[in-house]
Amino acid sequence: MHTQIRLAPGADRRIKAGHPWAFSNEIAMTPALRALPPGTVVRLEGDDGVRHGAWHFNPHSLIAARRLDADPEAPIDAGWFRARLGACLALRERLFDSPHYRLVHAEADGLPGLIIDRYGDAVAIQANTAGMEAATPLILEALHALFAPRLVIARNDSAVRKLEGLSESVTALHGEGTATVEEAGLRFPVDLLGGQKTGWFFDQRANRAMVARLCPGRTMLDAFCHTGGFGLAAAAAGAREVTLLDRSEHALDLAMQGARLAGFAERVVPLKAEALEQMERMTASGRRFEVVVADPPAFAKSRKDQPAALRGYAKLARLAAGLVAPDGILFIASCSHHVPQGDFAAAVAWGVHKARRECRILASVGAGPDHPVHPALPESAYLKGLLLHLA
Image 1 (cartoon, rainbow, N blue to C red):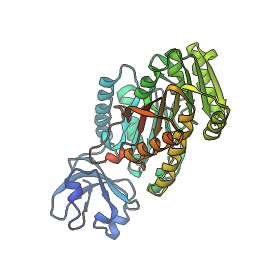
Image 2: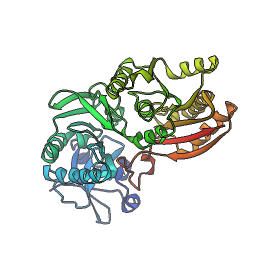
Image 3: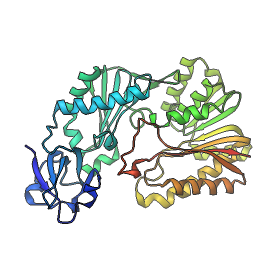
Image 4: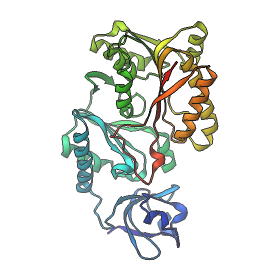
């Protein structure tokens, strides 16, 4: 039977409305509760006696409790994780034809703080809460019961783990070897131990396909390209020449491996440089591309970074728009949680205007369906992208 914790008087409004978090100031804290190990499974009740289910509890975190199950007595054991992960797997198998996707996207999949990306028989796990860190052996057991992955890597190097009192690390939990992601008929090598995030950005899958359809016979710049997802999709669609721009030589090497695997490396040019600085130099030299993608890492790591981030997106839009040939296409994106869609769109519009270009918005997009959003956490719809036609 789980330990019972109570909400403070009058602090149950959000929980009754379906919010999956309880903050520390909403809980009637006691010395006994503060002594509970982070990640303990608890029963959460209101001061009116209404039971709100089973939750992961961390007395040292601002988000003190995260909802797991509507049943307050649900055994959060290997069987529970197998059932929950099985539901995630069944949905992804309906959404996609091949086993390459984000298998678990935290709260929206009923597994708060847990990210799992699947690359065929290889898996990357990221446990961003004390509860999911403690449950990792159960998660691993459930994964083996469902599809027996050959390789499982724990990518526990996310900065948000510090908020839960967790250290950062990257470790192999099971197996050895490398991983490959398949997308749109292409195969890309993925570095699960040393690449960014969990190795591949599944969230942009549909957006890469959208941009690629506009690239046949055209020149294309993929700025902040990481391992070349946008650029190689464009080359596969028939782009005449693709320039991959990134500061990471390792990421560019992986991208070129993918280009060679696909047989079009002669149309792909890797360029190692700081993207913004190189874009400035290209603008000054009069270089132009018929399609430009600018998909940088997050500019805002916290809410206080928002003003600087918006200035950064305006500058990026100005530089990117200056590189687009007349009658060309710009796709620009933000993965900053702390930058709202409307503010991002306004910053981009201002930047394009400063570049003295006229534009129209062809599409305003977000992440793919393997990155669902919990209806009570609209702020978790972090990815924002704009597809623009520039006169």
